[in-house]
Length: 244
Image (cartoon, rainbow, N blue to C red; front, side):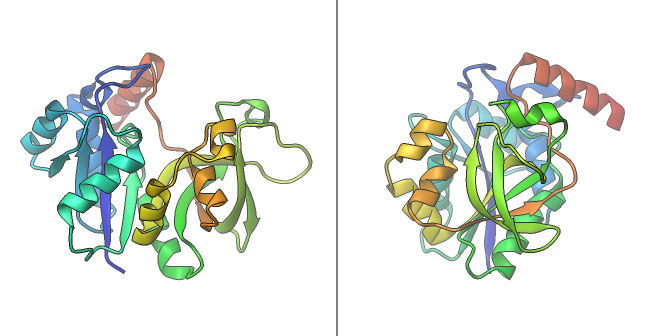
């Protein structure tokens, strides 16, 4: 298995414009994500950028970035475009997609996605989940829930993803947006139009499931901080202060 790690990022985020370059403890957020991905030791790392300012920031920090079409509709499409530019001959057979707004993502979570693809031949796409943080998560539509058929304590096959309330006994798995794709699965996913369930739930991974692709999830201990709005950015800056 020959993985590559790609980090999609663009400046035009609706709730926090310019967030890839947001200063977190003196370091642009995208550079923090880059450093965490490098620490995973999974494979080469590059940023799939939608804007030249992101390329400049990454290269100034000694990283690698690829400029992609700003009009691409999703991070997955941006990753695919960067992959074609970086590896046109198809040497890398696995692509790990790490969101560019997770400045403290645990390198072990990135490695867990690669491990799932290595260990589970039936897995087309690997991702990560963690236990619910509070009972309120069960009814919060902003918390994406993964319904899993567990094959051990630390991994399981995904049956569905939903924003809806889950009832009954048993754990509720909170889904975190780190993805590992077999290259063929990424190509098939990006080539397909949005699916009915994807449109209904506003969850991109349901397109993969409707295509018949198998998604597996690794259980991680800590939820990565995701920066989506000014309050999240303030929390990330506070977290950076505690690390110094």
